[in-house]
Image: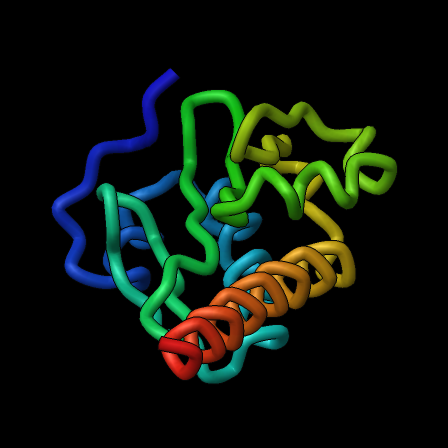
Length: 133
């Protein structure tokens, strides 16, 4: 099932083009992401709302015909929280949820913080590797 196609230039434009129930769910998701990653950059990538942290992909989200999806851009983050995610269909990089039952904000913040930790660890490892050369 494909995400809604968009020509939006920003997240507000994307949200304006989705049905009201999906928009409400995605606005809650956006707010939770922003709460966990206040310095992340917002934009559109792959025709979906996207957040970048330190120039690296942090999270995406999208409205689909019968659900919404949250993409934390890390299978390790999803795998590491599989018990908390049991109520939601997941796949390699996606967490799906119905529009009338958005992901809990506390869970979204936890997932985003875990992804930020991955990004920061990778950046630190990269810096350490460059110093050794």
